[in-house]
Image (cartoon, rainbow, N blue to C red; front, top):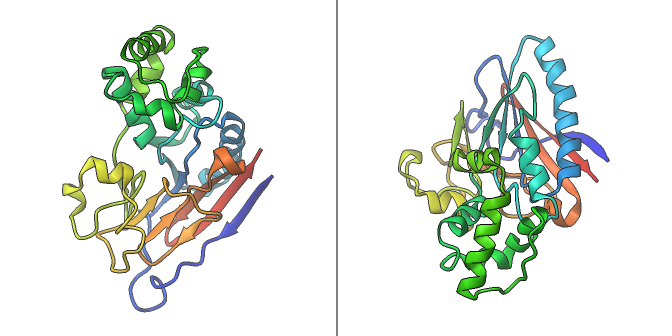
Length: 260
């Protein structure tokens, strides 16, 4: 399944305030939460590659921003990281954001006892993709340390380097791209990483404009959610099989969706 459809934002662009835009001469793609679903990632990359080739033919520069949560829940976290850290879109400037699940994995690597909760919300599946058997609910200190040691033995160096290089935020023109959202009323330059990775309320229901239009994932919705202040594109790929990308060219917006 593959589909393209336009975004019709309320509020901005209706005469009350200018529609946000990316820089002139740029087409940007934002890709939602992948969560270990390698097949839909491959489908999305193929769809973007074809569309990006056409945009480059029109003289546009092409940028892709991946919104984080590449791992956990789905069954092929290893395969997803392998694809993303090996030039997933040749000729496209790619930016990779940190999601709360990548942060949890890095915390587990640093202190597996303190961060053992990771195993309960997708970490066990991530370990399984590296051939490590783990059970949800594991909290025994010696077992957690053994799992961490096994992960470090099997985690490719390029996967770990990729995880450590992830960014909390990317700004393009009038848009700010983050994993979860922002703390309303706080300047972007002073946002706390924890909020960028995990916030829901009051961000989701906030009605007043932010410093930038916020593009985010993290909170699953049945379809892309467009408001006057934010665009949410986590359509629950690990549960629904549907991965969503937002396409931004000038002030125009559209979506690409792919399914397994």
